Length: 273
Image (cartoon, rainbow, N blue to C red):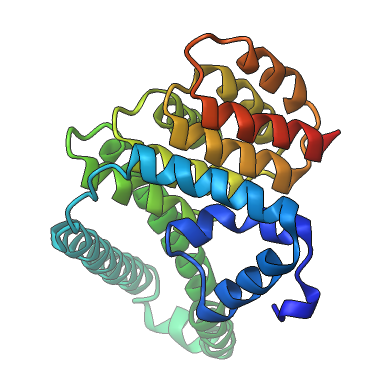
């Protein structure tokens, strides 16, 4: 996005990304140019920056090993082999039954023409339709395997494995209630701040679902980490979720609320009003 197209709303949405080094060079430059010309955004940026520096980022989780990915492809390869074996067995059974029925010479002579037609139709069906069905079944199986691994890894004691579990949601085409429940449980209860922040990012991508938006609003009252509170505030502004205003006002009554977070929430309420 060019600097001339950057406005206050776009700049505020990207402040957290600027602080966490998640923006491209052109995006950072556009924000820097806007901050130089906008005192209000500059003040909010300084508040966010001070909060970020004061609290510090949680320890970065170790790089996940490739063992799980290798295991996944091993499972997929095993599935393909099983399907191929099942197809061969089905064909052999068909040939054996066909030979038993078609052995008499008279039946062979009378039904010769019909046999040729049947074989042609059968070959066309086998070469086209079954492949589509198998591919669809394979795709479904892969999605189920990804969901199964996601639900299993998200309860792993290792933070890196839980981060990997959250990343699987990007590869699941249809996120069901079980996956959403696991994500919200992680967002609200995971002891690792990095895992919570990545989970929040994944849920924000699913915010077209009204239940997800409602869940994010309810999550505001359950967060204790200032970093997650600030990130949630940014998400609410990005989604323009006005239902969160009530929850933010309730948060302002908390005596243990960080002063810098309080300033951020006050600005968020102003942006949503």
